[in-house]
Amino acid sequence: MIDFPLARLQPLPAAVYAALGLKSGGSPSPRSAALLQRALELFRENSEPRGICEPVAAGEFAGIYAGRGQNAPDTPLTGIFQRAASLHLFAFTLGARISHAIGLLFEHDDFALGAVLDAVASVGADNAGRIAAEWAERQVAAENSAAADRAFLYSPGYCGWHISGQEKLFASLRPERIGISLNTSFLMNPLKSISGVLVTGTAAIHRFSTVYPFCDQCKSPACRERATARPA
Image (cartoon, rainbow, N blue to C red; front, side, top):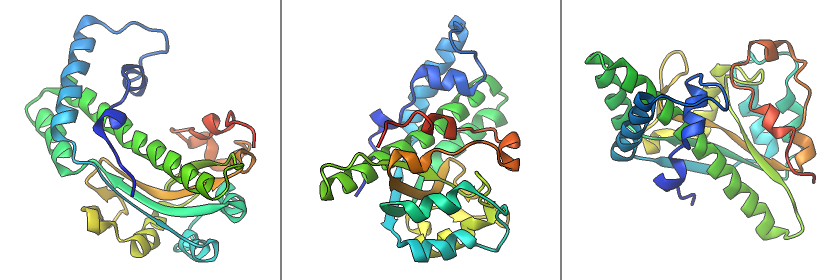
């Protein structure tokens, strides 16, 4: 069972400012700092973190990953998951209450605080993926103390995995058990939710060149962090 304490989910100020577009090394204004502090308070008051994680065999995941057959012709995950030490389907949500709080702020024209809280919640949900990845690494280490494997979350909608892949992922994992559903566009509800597959293996399997056609349109190039993963 993975524990998601709010203290670890709560993002660092620098991560929130980066999500809002503040350049690294820039100094936020006093008003921005005050907005962030209020947003962090609302994050703690309204977050209801819940996650679900289950192991999946490579053969079974191949069918899940194929989805409706709409993936890019060539994707990095196709080769990565086949070399993994372990695979886990994963989903996490901060719950409906925080999405409602964000919506109310925009509804009442408090756009500045709404935007900051939205960024805080998005980074907080991403932090859950990192917590889950650390958990997956510990599972492998418990079986082989000499292993130096790394785990990363790969999600539908990224790296050539078509967003419709959510359909088979949800059918297998059943995240409705923790209150997550899909709409007809395969987007999750509540909005501040994440899903995908945790791939655990040597650091080398996670390194790939960003030369795929879809890389130019990527707005979340997390793979750049993976290039600096510690050596296997």
